[in-house]
Length: 235
Image (tube, rainbow, N blue to C red; front, side, top):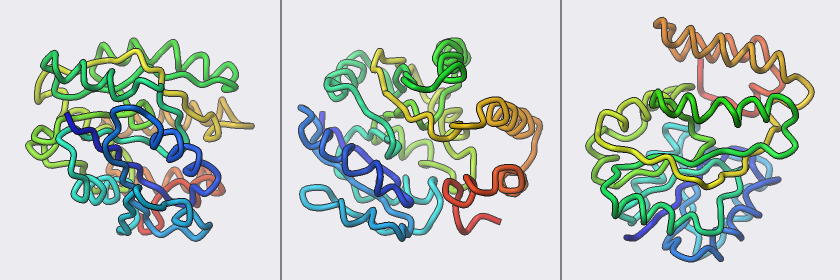
């Protein structure tokens, strides 16, 4: 197995350096690709050989696909820039692939995430039984399966939701022990507001609301965070 890690970035100078350093010292990680969507904070200055830098359009789906296209591994692992993967992340993925899984994700932890972080940690395994998981949990996939499902949809939001639905239809997936340690920065200072906002968006998307309408709604209700975390080219 050759494992390529793909990291989409947009103004992640505060986080990406530590993640790259960790991955470069992780056994079994053959390649790291950063797909940057137009950072203006010096993010790309942290990307030095042997890490590969890909400059792409803005939008997580666009960036994930650009990074995957540049990667040479037969297994792809997609990570957010603000996570900490386990030291044996590659061996966990390899074991799952050898057991016939087409892809999957990892158990999540949110240290310092307060009550909402604890609740999300408890809720994630239940959602996983329903075949629902998200990009912050570290999605991995065999290259041929990634190509068979058509990669990530290039949507302003919910690209991971659509991709996971396709991945779950492609074959047996694995829920690995990890853990992937994720940042609680998205809800710091506003946990209840954030939980309600996420819940509404998930329900609205399931009922047919377009990603374009959802990203406008998100920006209207979380303007400061939305300017940083959602694609600049989204409607």
